[in-house]
Length: 223
Image (tube, rainbow, N blue to C red; front, top):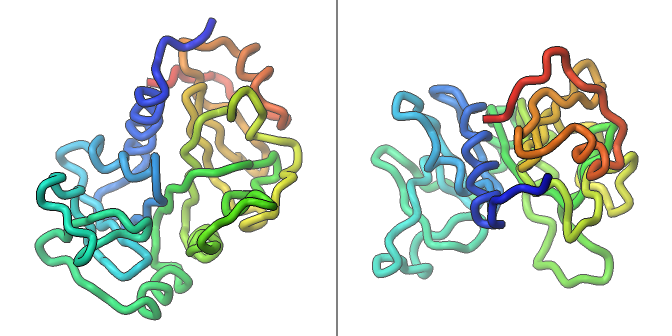
């Protein structure tokens, strides 16, 4: 059975599930796109410190459209941003010292491909123009926990593979994958389906996943 969710609903569904992984006081870096939806779903009793690698510690919610002025405050993706009370602006060198120094508790990123060995490809498709590799390589190596938040397939093509075919961002860096179909974790190095969205069957997940994975016992419903 196929999901009844629209693409926009899928993004929010994934973001809501990722938000449950964050703990009070976590120092968190969110990638551009889908991961930026995560803060909207944090429980009221959970406060995290959001870091933008372009030099903001304490990124706030996105400003209202009429208040946005990208000439002044932008996040790492170049979008208008705000800063929370007590937040700080730091130079790029200090920002990457925080990232490379192991001070980031969790980073949430999208991906082009992830494979069954935890390898990640998310920075370039050969032949396509990109502005640069950004900070993903530093983040996935420096953060304590790496969560990939993405749709399970891309136009029907597998994104969770036996082996990545695109240039790698980093090797064996992924801890968890959250998609609209379920939650997969690397448990003792083995890709494991720990939660299943009740809108899908296990057979559908297997068909949409090239990578080999085991199924947790018990297999929890993805809420």
